[in-house]
Structure formats: C-alpha cells, structure tokens
Image 1 (tube, rainbow, N blue to C red):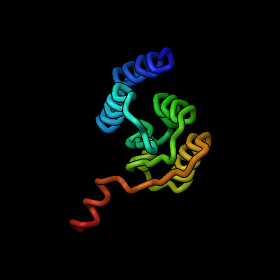
Image 2: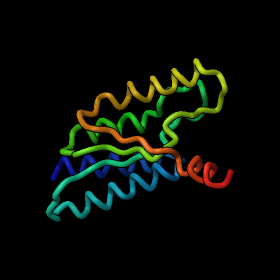
Image 3: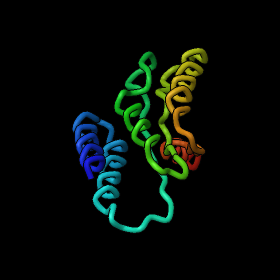
Image 4: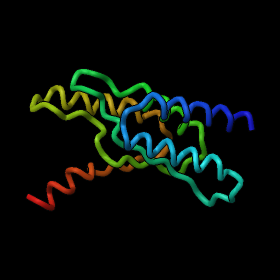
Length: 129
C-alpha cells in the first residue's frame, strides 16, 4: 500500500511537471491503472511516447528517466513507445546518432522487450504524401 502511495505521488508530480500532452495521457492512464489495482491482472505492459528532448542538444527528459525507473521495478511483460523518441530537428547525422544513442542508453535499464513505433504524425505524412 505504501508503494502505491509513493507511485501515485510520483505520477501526480510528473503530471504537473510535464508540458507534453502525450506524456500527460500516459501518466493519467498509469494513475487509473494504479487505482484499479485490485483487479486481477493477466499481464501488464507499459506505453509511453513523446519523450523527445526540447531541442537537439538536450538529453532525454528527467521525467522520462524517472518513468523508466518505475517501469523497471514492476512486473511488466513488455514496453512500447508510440513515437517522438528523439527531437530530430536537424539534418546533422551526428546529432541524430547521438539522440538515438541517448534514447537507447536510457531504455537499456529495462529488462524486457521494447517495441518502438513511428510517430502518428509520420504515419499521417506517409499516407498523405
């Protein structure tokens, strides 16, 4: 019970600290799942997205790294990302490589399979161009 209260407090603080709508939705879903914790769970997974840094020169956001730590401590079957894992606002391949490297360094703490999907924006672009 104490662990659930600590998790709820972290989720509320994370929600207040972020400006990302996708991350806010993810945190809200996590809060709902936490509240419904009395239900029997067959398996669990984690989903996040839009964790890209604010610009090309920053590392992965601290709130994302904290979420990964929370996920790491749970009985999670797999993790999914729904896009926007790097900023990608440059044509400089060295910066893009570093951004991917930063992302991979962050998620390597998870002892489970990770599935990355494209950003919905890029899916929309490919359908309309």
